[in-house]
Image 1 (tube, rainbow, N blue to C red):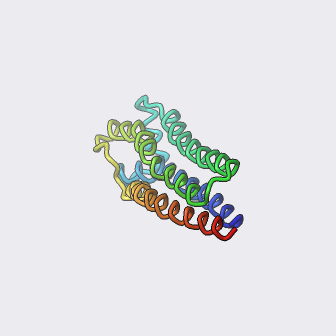
Image 2 (image 1 turned 30 degrees about the vertical axis):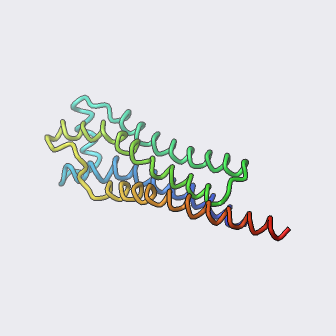
Image 3 (image 1 turned 45 degrees about the vertical axis):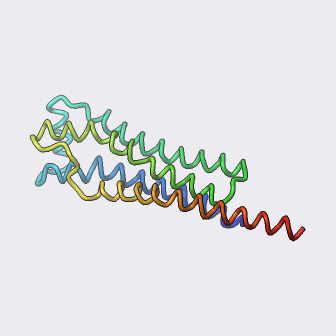
Length: 167
């Protein structure tokens, strides 16, 4: 059981880190490149700066959201370990972090996306399918979370009842 808890801890934080890394790459690299085909990333950012947009703030917000998400997953894991939460609760909590990640992920890219839209006269939506991966991961986590809680609680109650009757 202790090994399973360790695996859930590592995988939970690693998945949050992967989600955060994809968020940063999508919003700061892939989407600007897809919005303005034929231009290099450095020329896109240079043109934004030339037009007076503050891309440093946009980049800091996106990276900050990613870092906060990973720290939230790690901090939550620490609290769950300290409280000796059941394994299913640990899994559900990590799924909750992943599900909740879509709102700040969407909001964090708004400023840079709108800057690119205004500077290059393109629409302000996402221009690659990669953001859909983030949406899909959050959606799948949201769907899985109640299943993990219900099935996990049922198994936990059954095991506890079995141990009590065996004693």
